Image (cartoon, rainbow, N blue to C red; front, side, top):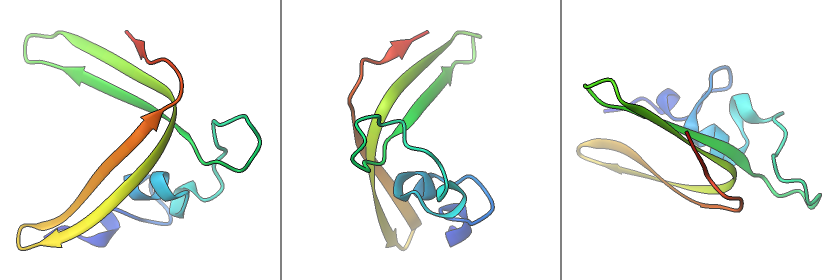
Length: 90
């Protein structure tokens, strides 16, 4: 079973902290520039395969939610979000 420190931690980058702007992300600056206190992050997804091909997708301005659940298999974090700017594929 996963340790809760795998999902949130005051001194290490963790996904749940990025979603909630807590822990190591508490003092981070939002990428949202409309000035109404909306928390948004830039998401970078890097992919590669065994043949050496790779690609990166950058989602420049995302608002994310996280749903944490626990079962016999362990903890699961499901991330959903909306990107408010066009993605960049490289």
